[in-house]
Image 1 (spheres, rainbow, N blue to C red):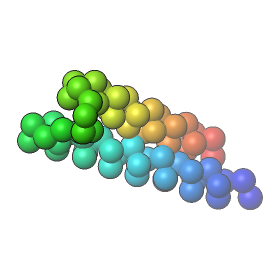
Image 2 (cartoon, rainbow, N blue to C red):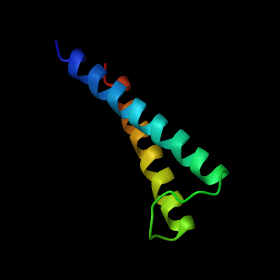
Image 3 (spheres, rainbow, N blue to C red):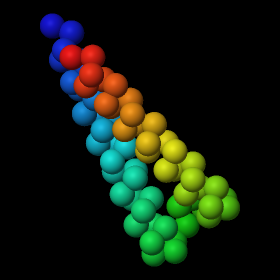
Image 4 (tube, helix red, strand yellow):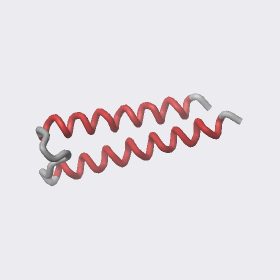
Length: 65
């Protein structure tokens, strides 16, 4: 019964992390700002870190099944 919420949370974290990672990579590749008004290096680093953390959380949720 508890595997349903773990699967849902894992999918949400994985989709968010993957989407954010792809979006950040595309923005950096086109030399467009990731966040307006912030250093390009700092914003790309922070977005990548958030994406990796979300992917790790998604993986952790799937290991709890």
